[in-house]
Image 1: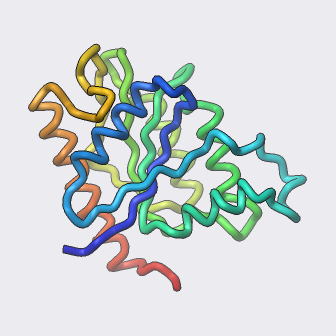
Image 2: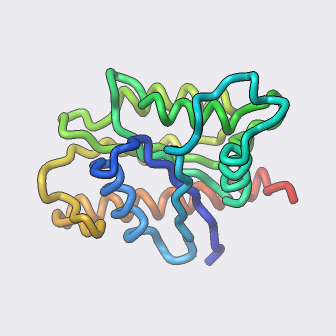
Length: 190
């Protein structure tokens, strides 16, 4: 089994985010050979092109964290039928300055949870458009829109519903296979 380092972003800045719980569950359910590490976004200042000539250390570390992984996973809520501002800000930092886009050729996937019955479908569609512009090869299937109900995922990331756990396990297995396919065609530059 090929080992892949996967960086994941939690789109919500809230410490009690249900998407943070989903991320914990995905880490637990990831197949062997998939090393998961969070890439935090909360300390990034608001992006401005004024920084392009001299990125602050927090943004340099952020871009390095993305460079250090083979693929990225976005675990995001839906705010006002789109992605949270903090997540969009992080993507802007990572994709700049011009010609130094951290997402180019980096395999990615999108997932999210919401109390609503459509999960985070509209936010995910918005994020997919942004990632396509960033030239990130995107896993298009399996799509995952998780309706969150109290008790579905524990603080430790344990999923109480076996059907949901099996779906998430399959999602992560499919993501691992997608990463392998993409990196076979587009090997990481060293």
